Length: 116
Length: 113
Image (cartoon, rainbow over all chains, first blue to last red; front, side, top):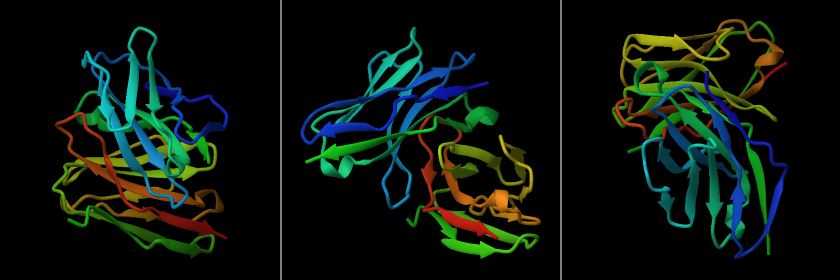
């Protein structure tokens, strides 16, 4: 079974500073994918970044990067140069190998508030 | 492309009523799924499908039915609504053959009185 753990309480960051959102995972699969989604107050789920378990380099997408530490089973999201529009709920998720294990398992989310 | 569409956006039901939440995607994705989101619980998988004619249960399937007669559509049926089914429902689709992210619809906010 797959499990995602997000235990940080609500996070606060000053505008233009960097912030790290923590995510640890547990799985018995050798092949898996890790994802981060953003959910603003409007409610939609926005895909941010993906990391494959066999990817040797950390994924980056603009101001988002994923700090992937496989041995520690952690997949932290780093947001550089925070903006007011980054205030939202952030979910870490994982999926197993393709096929029947394509389903996503989500963590409970972290609320990020960016202060001007 | 419209992406993933869901109807209705809001719905209020009385206990015992039935209804169908509609989901459609125009990206020719094999994989489609339904999640419910409750405060403090993250998103939990209800049912999913890996192609037309193939469906399977997720983490919280009780009280819900699905079918997948076409690649594009994946409706979720509530057979006899209960207050415990008050939630926000998301439909998502993605390519099964790659390890990429799923695309989510805008959600349906359901209240069961």
